[in-house]
Length: 69
Image 1 (cartoon, one colour):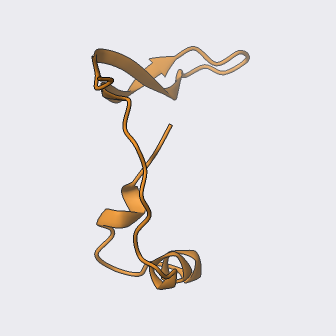
Image 2 (image 1 turned 180 degrees about the horizontal axis):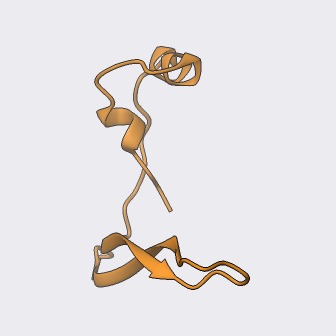
């Protein structure tokens, strides 16, 4: 799975982010075979041995769009 969050970062928040933004060339070619629309959200979940629930991150695929020719 390709994740491009670093491309949208407007401010250098730490040393790793600064290093990523200095990589040259600043772009790379890639081919998309499909696009997935994914909803990401937090969900309460029971925690063994705890009185209060915890949280976990959930991901649901809402749609997948194939781009193959």
